[in-house]
Length: 170
Image 1 (cartoon, rainbow, N blue to C red):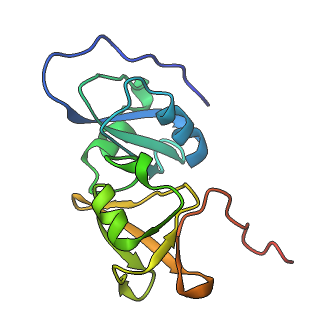
Image 2: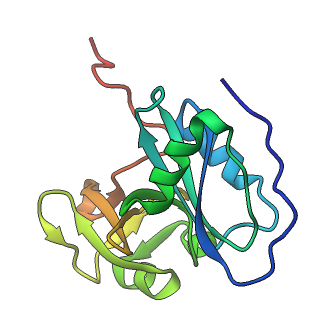
């Protein structure tokens, strides 16, 4: 169930966190919607919600107001007040392309930490092959990029643009 919702008239004042729930069924649908926003929000995160049906709600740091359909307003509120999410837009995201060291990622963006799944904080000199797709986790007010080991002592982001489906070889 998709809804076509245009932003309401710009509100006077500073950017604030708002929640939007439009019934996106997949992360890719929500990412696409976020990518089409003009002007782009300072921060945009996706949140998996279960009510009133499983879908992806969105939180935005923006000065623009957006409306959700009335039945999805609880999901929008949950996204706006959530302490965890998956960041799609954040300061510096456009500079995280190609191969970068952990140190470069931290310098070029608002990501505060790079972790290796199950191993803790990554070494600042380690190279991360971004695949031009970086989706850090928003945890309690900070962005954390979770990575996994790759060939040659490098790292790759845990979330990939085109992941291999579970049990693909069966």
